[in-house]
Image (cartoon, rainbow, N blue to C red; front, side, top):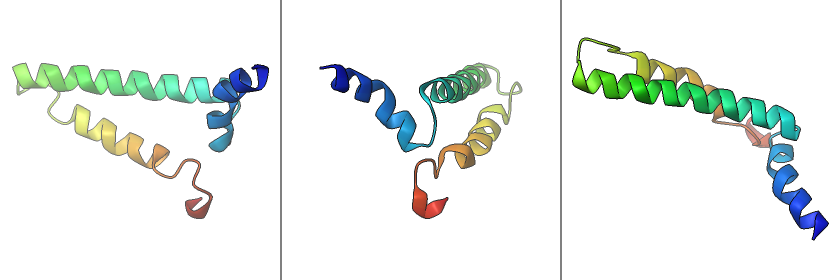
Length: 75
């Protein structure tokens, strides 16, 4: 059972070349940026003059950082 719990927390971070802590920090920052972009998109829907390119710019900035993570063939 111990190996199963350990694997649940460590296998994926290891697959992208990170420790658990590094993965936690990366995912947390990434998630917060996505939440911010989502809020900007919602506000933009209500107020079209506000945050005209914030959500799309954020997605364009984040995509290259995650597109090839853990893929040794594209590293």
